[in-house]
Length: 234
Image 1 (tube, rainbow, N blue to C red):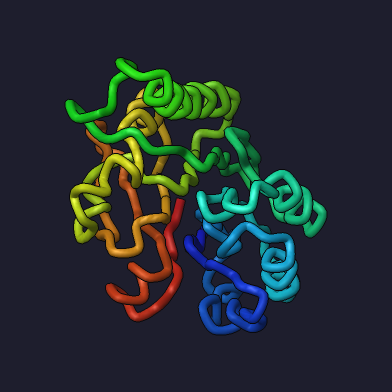
Image 2: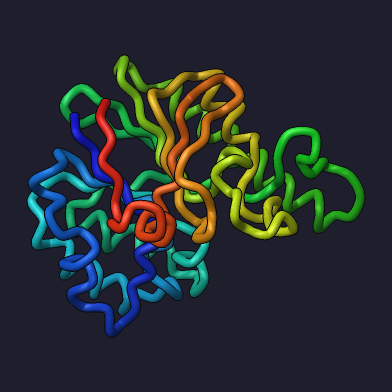
C-alpha cells in the first residue's frame, strides 16, 4: 500500500483551494491519505467546513487524527462529527483497517522524553498534566491491542521521540511530545509512525526499538523536500 501523509494543514476560513496546492498529485501517488492533526487553525467549525469542501474532491480514503489547534475553540467533538459525516476515518485512540493494513491513531500529548520525562509529583496541576499524558499512552496501547493486521501504521500529532524535533527550541521539547507514546508503540509493534506538530523539526528518526518515525508536518516537508506530503509504503 502506498500511503501519503501530511500534518499541520492549519485551514482558515479563507483557505479554500489550499489542498489543491499542497496535495497536488496525491491521488496518483497514494492509495490512502493520512492527516496528522492541526487541520483547523483555531479549531472552528467554519475552518473545518472549508477543509472538507476541498478534501471532497479526493477519491482515496482519508484517515485523520486531530491536533492541539483543533482543540483551541473547545469544539473538537463537533469537528470529529463533521469529518466523520464527510467520510473521513477519525481516530481518537481508535483503529481502522483498509485493505489489510491496520491504522491506529490519536492526538497524543506533551510530557518530555527519556530520563527527562515529567513525573507525577508536586502540585495538583502538574499531576493533572502528567495524568493526561499517561492516559493517552494507556488508551493508545488498548487500541493497538485490538489490531489483528500484520501491517500496522500509527498516526499521531505529538512526537513520540526527540529526534524529529531537532530544529525546535529545546525548551519546547516537553510540550512537543513524549516518549510514553514510543514506549507503547515499541511494545505493541507498528511498521512506522507519522506525526506533525513540530513545524521546525527534522523529517526522520526512530524509536528506541527501531520503528521508523516520520515528521510529516507540511512545513518540514516543504522545507526539506520541496513538497508538502510524504509517500510511504507498507
